[in-house]
Image 1: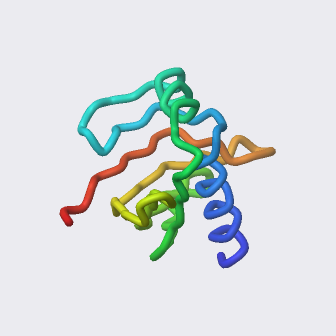
Image 2: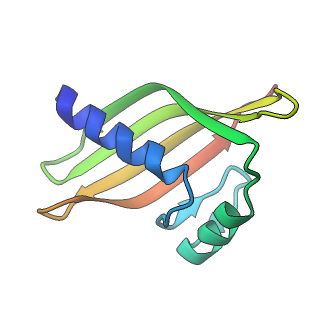
Length: 109
């Protein structure tokens, strides 16, 4: 289980880079499709650094995993950090894990 947890965590961390992602319910409450998420990532400031904490997975079936964690978005120029709760559904397609859904909820200051 620890190996699977690390594998899914690495995939989640890679999503915070300028790569593609699946449809998601944004922290704003709006649904965002893959192309909108890519546009957002391309506009993302290079002074932003992301980190994860409290990462956990729950196997819902042999092919589906739910990942939950806290995301921390730090502006390196101001040192201001915003926090959110995140959840993702991952599906094993046989040869790789694919993100099927992601949701972020902003936490109050």
